[in-house]
Length: 78
Image 1 (cartoon, helix red, strand yellow):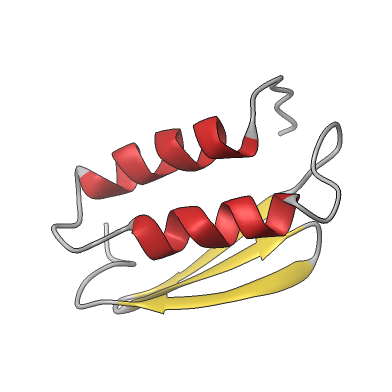
Image 2: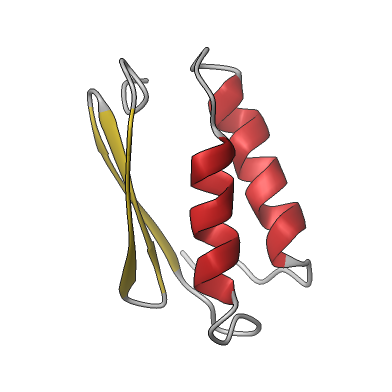
């Protein structure tokens, strides 16, 4: 599935973190910063995001480049 949005990296990060925050009680600001940092290198049309979840970690990839992993008790569980 391909979705097209015309929003800033900050708005995208905020929306994703709001959704994550409804299921995870810890701090999600590190996830937001990884998304925004990943878009600084050339976000815009065609930007891809990948989120790999483990029970206690969430890895963020933007345009095929790993932005790192956020660890937290239960952050990747649904």
